[in-house]
Image 1 (tube, rainbow, N blue to C red):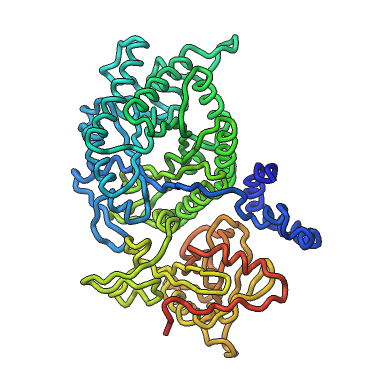
Image 2 (cartoon, helix red, strand yellow):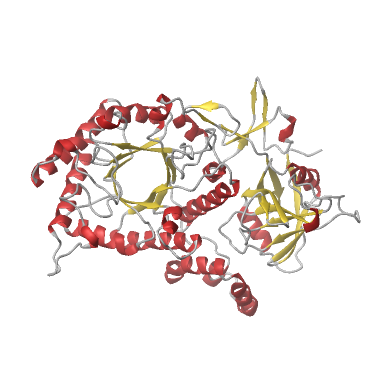
Length: 580
């Protein structure tokens, strides 16, 4: 079983790129599968998670720019257009942690992200009950793999003096937080220190960690010394805070082994390994695999590092491209982020502590990998966080109307909106289908109202039925009629090609009748359980229109899919609320 676990993600990514080969393999192995239905082999073939989920899994964001943006008059809004403070908005959308950077002396850059600005933002997070991560850059401005500039006040100091500078600065900032009642859960000693920190003293040039004799270079030893000084200072002020070592390119196992070996063998220690993973930048840098392969490599790397070093891991930074003129990009970003969250939760033996997004509230012109539109509203990307934290859809009376309990009433009525997790006003309807196997929660897209409304009219008289890998939903999402009506069109659940994506509801249209307002005269509705081969949403090539997706209960659908041939239909007992 341990060997199966070790190679699961490799299988996982290969399956997504060679689906026909996988299906042929399944067909040939049916006799074997029937004899070993309860074995580990069946677990791998169904891609059920083999490992435990993290007990405390955090969904977070670095919003260090928020106070500066406020000063500039840049406002942010929730899904339904209500103005919010950035930290409160993150909480509303389902995030439970905030990451905040701190520079040594950024006076030449407006003073933003100094210790006092850090305190303002940390107090907001504390008041909301959110966890705080402090990200020390040990520079007067940006520190990353391409630059780790020594603070101006430390320039000219000798190595031992800089060690003391690191310790003093770390203690000073953290003591300010402590004096004001803020206790960070994590403290990051250095930001993306893939090539060391505090250059030139701790700079690793051209990946040269060892000299020709095999000994650690002076710079590698000094890098470890700086990290040790920061670690000791953190523990002096906050003994229970978890210290993070943060590197970029989370998929690069060689980078992490070289860097972390240099730290460990030179006496440094840490509590969590933080990773940056940016598919956009990785592909711009010449990566030749797929997104699925990239994420699979990252998860493999996490698991290998946990085994080797014995510490937890996390995604400390990620981000996806935003372009207001190309909504399909944000849908793709949402799918990628949702996939990353799921993989980190379910395939790391509970050792990944969470996923953090870097500066999501940025407008596209400010930073292209934010997650908000030019108008300051969350794009589809942020829905990955909201739905990853889906607990319930609740009711709440307001002066503007009533928030409906798992409402399937048309959003176009105007008075109704939707509350996710009890706090988040949500602009897409959700409906729960109750079956004997469990509940399935569907999110419907307002962008495709005709198909959405047809779904709502007919979902009340449905049943899940069919054969493995290809299921028919009797009268479940047909455009015309109800069960027994000859005009009713059956709909299909196609078995997932890409199991890591959530199920998508799509309307299959006759190609000659496609039009930009999504009005088709004859329509079948589908659960397209996977990303498939299409390039854009909500209009997928000239055949499909996506009108919703499964956001909860994928395990229920999997259980239905795996019923033996000839099993009776699984009835939808009733949707919530009852539909007209």
